[in-house]
Image (cartoon, rainbow, N blue to C red; front, side, top):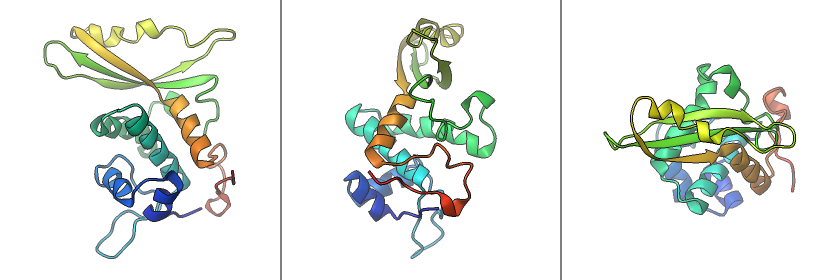
Length: 187
């Protein structure tokens, strides 16, 4: 398994080290290899973490998504690590069909009464010859309980695909390979 420091990730993504530190401290990305364990012990990150940092960069810098929303989104994505993710969400990082024939949507809603909101992940599959149908039905689960005054939908499969192109990371077979065989493809 390739182990990366925050300096190496910052260089690959052309970001300040402080930004990588901030996103880790705010629990948007959790180090897969070695989390913080005391003073002087450097955190180490995996290829998946590099991909996550690239996704955060795209969403935060290009699409102006708030870090608190990204915190919630990545928490939902990481539930797979804990065995809590519904079976339809498994292998988001390693399944190459996400962003192509399959899409994972992150839906953020704002409710009128509480000015709060709800967040959820939805998996959609593209039918032959059509784009992702049924987007108009996504608000339905929210509107049954409260009046929804607004919502945003992120196509995070497409964001993952963009991040893979940005970093050269290929995780298609990452979960199946022995750790010592995992690698980052050269661009």
